[in-house]
Image (cartoon, rainbow, N blue to C red; front, side, top):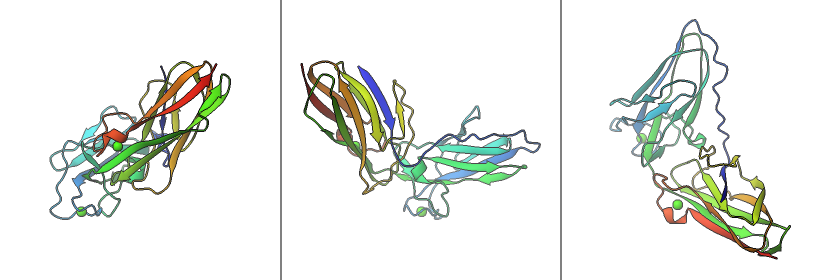
Amino acid sequence: MRKFTVGLVAAAAALLAVSPAIAERPNTINGEIWLDVNEDGVRQAEEPPLAGVVVGLPGKPANATTDERGRYRFTGLADGTYEIEFNQPVGHGLTVPGRDSDVDWLRSGRHTVTVQHGSRQRVDAGYRKANHDRSVGIVEADRATIAVGERVTFKVFYGNVGNVADQIQLDARWGTGLKLESITGNVHHVWDNEATTLLGAVAPSSAEPNFVLATFVATAPGELSVDFSSPAGIEGDSNPANNAHRGHATVLG
Ligand SMILES: [Ca+2]
Ligand SMILES: [Ca+2]
């Protein structure tokens, strides 16, 4: 079986461990992570901290984990621009950005911050209980029947509805008789191996149609299919049953 993987769409999330220079005075990045019960981006007095949340800093050897007061801290940082990665606790997603939550959910938990001259930058992140449904929708083939040497293009719709802006990943698997030619559409990255790392984000409840076009050349006759799926094991997906769809094409000999 062949496979490609695409991470989809909107916000580019390139890693930005940009040119940290040797600093004479080390810098600090710290903050608090908390549960936004009423989902307003503001931390009311009764809203608790979230302990045990892993915060990553590419380029640093170790992640930080929030303590019982929801605090994390990176110290000894050279001058530079860093991209902090806020991991999602099981069943939670980032809340809306607001007074007490600095992280833009459309960047899938990534937040860029610059430190220099011994500064300290505070970045707080609020989370809320996830209630969302990502889906891989209808797969349309532009032609139901083709001959060997001809092309078929599958249009694959995907969606993300709910309160969590999340990374969307789409896998495709196919057998012999089809040769992948191109991937276009709302695609951010394409992998041609089994790698599952992904980048990209989709706004929840977006009315914008999101789709991928996958074009194959037929190399052998037969009843051929391509399975498109969002990987299993996504926390907080309210309907795991709609995370895959199959495209068909008949290749005449
Ligand atoms: Ca709140
Ligand atoms: Ca789903």
